[in-house]
Image (cartoon, rainbow, N blue to C red; front, side):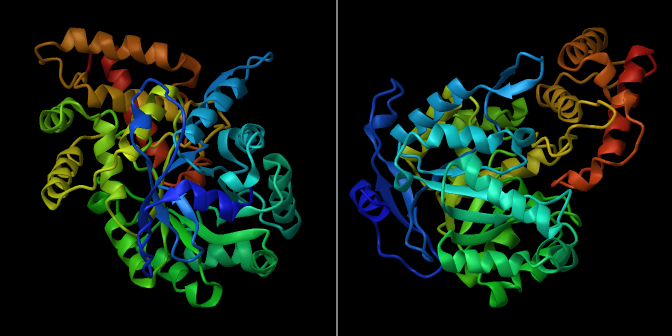
Length: 450
């Protein structure tokens, strides 16, 4: 069965396609996983550019489950990946997004092993030209060609210029134009080895404006942006851009968008208690994460919403959300934006755990330090003063849990401020500054001087 026949058979009730808007429909999935997800059908969107019928829930392959390998290093648990892919496909998911640099270069191969067990026309495959460290033509071509081998394919459905926001048109020229890669990729699109060509973006508004202006020259088939109800109006300017602006600019040009970080690296699935209680009071039977996904999926220009599902529990919860999809009402949308205002008041580090900053040349577990700190803020477990009522209890809780979460030689106080991490962070976090702030906080806890 070819791609067209497969998707035609799997999709039912597809609405008429309109320019710039992903038409809504359903796609069937089989199997009963005990979650009740098989009772309905996966929400799909029709790509107005290519006609592809894409599951609104996409599988982001940046957070595959990991285990310790024979040499003690973290490696992907291929057996677990295969099981997750099987359940996702059975539930109607047909879009998989990876990159040559995810999980320190292991993600593409794991995705290729898992997906090659299925007919190539039964899923959409997205990967990227992640030529951050070496954008020479030789290295870029090698990365492109290696992706075909790792993913066991002879074409890409969606191919992205990876995170081209930093530096705007100047960085774009260095990474893709001066080395002749844009000319090469356009020819690859013409030849059909790339079916849809786009880019992923993190950065300032002026950089986005420069890049989106290139649509007239290169005809972007899609763009991948960070969008969630916190970043809708609370992205940290000037280095980041509100999703409200990004989405509007794409929508008015008729460019479909793929969404990354709908949960902000899990932060919107584990909210501070004050915010989580408000959501649970509204819908006790729904997960906190489902609100974030419904927010993103309620916008018609969204083609696919990526989720890095590390375990079956998260996958099944997401399948339930997208196989029984309910767009937000205007009142619910306003309610979530009020929650975003509340969340913006919490002093959390805006880290999504993407691991782009790793490995640190001096061994700091940067994502681990930030994740622990954010968890303490989220749970209301921060000791703020030795005059605090439960200061001794909270002090001990932070220090004990910190030592358990991050081994001592990889903690914040070992950062030497080399700045190597800064050029890799898509969130533009001032990483050395935040590590110093956390290190200083921990030292004050240890010395009883807070």
